[in-house]
Length: 150
Length: 150
Length: 150
Length: 150
Image (cartoon, rainbow over all chains, first blue to last red; front, top):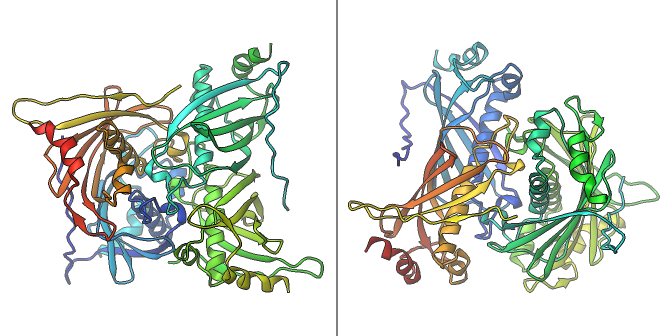
């Protein structure tokens, strides 16, 4: 019933091409909890906001996929919480697509506050259609991302 | 640009028929904030949960309206916060439909913890169709609620 | 790469001085609901984000009040929902403090998407101390805001 | 009128003692998103609600730990999303503490709708004090849980 916690590796080298992007958010008051730090569910929401901004940046906004009948659900998610984040802090979210997307693809994330690494995580995705069936990524997606591996 | 804050009146008498219902929730940790009390946005979410449970109780669950192309958006909402609510408290949500629904209808709410009144509020609604047009309440809704005014 | 732009407008005229401020947000996917529009509880959260950014702009960030034992709870809130807002839209939140703050004070808000007015609302506040007692606004607050009425 | 039913299962066998507990929730409208299913961040919130209810069941409510200066932050979390969950569904959350807690301890979770497994996940925890330092679990916690391994 249990499964291995995913392990992030920061291995990158001269030969490893990837797609990476940064986005900053500011911690909302509603995102804090009675421990006076950020509630741990918000990291997933920030990961998503960063994915969305990456798609905006690539000029393939997510709503266009939905309008064409494509959805990109989350298949799995994992997070390691390294330091607490606090109200009104500006956090930097880094997203990386290390491997050229196939039917399944994975994003890695870091959340930082200045020099402090707050959390790191990853999410796995696939494209599905309106019948909830897994489908190949649409061509517009492949075109937008594959140049990062050329 | 501003508008009057809605004022709840607890006037009820022998001659005033209404539909009322109670639902209890328990305060989640994620619903607290750094003030170590419930964040003020959750009251709207509890009002909605109570509306949904009222419809479940009336055997007209909300998802059936959506499946038939009817939606019940919120037109306005107002809340008075009287006392803070805390983590792990069981709160009682009371909902009242004082007037037999017409095209627009209004719910009044109270949120209580034991003998303490935590908040009171109200929301206004109408039915719309998929084209976002205001429509008359569907017959199944009228049938389910109008007996409370007979 | 940044999604917040801070825009200050000192709109005032001969007959009515006030403090006003604008802040923009982008609709998160998590803020949508099954109606495929923004859930109505998020407007309160955006109002709060705009209040916080106003305090940041005035160089009196909210966390400094909390560090000194002052809190600014919401006493009441009301919203009129005029048009639905959608995922990935950039919304402009306007906040206005029409009257020089006394023990109680009120903010008015507008939420706009391009030329469309999405919602308007208001919140009432007071300062309290750690014992949950209403207190006069601290001097640093008065100093920061009262120049807008001079 | 109540939506929580608490159901205790002491599933254990000759080879593996453990502490397990079940808690049911009903999907709120606000928890859906534009894909018309539950947003993936809510699973973490339900896991937490289930942990809290387990502590309530064990007569060691979480707020008592906080009142004594102990906190139980989340060190890591992971989820596999197996099937979508929908509005107004009653979901069963199962929580298992497989190993007798040491300084770090791990909960495993399942989320089910009728016979369908919706998701499974796990969270890791430790106790910390007000200075954010890792500490041994307080005696009241050990006493409440260790009988499940006797």
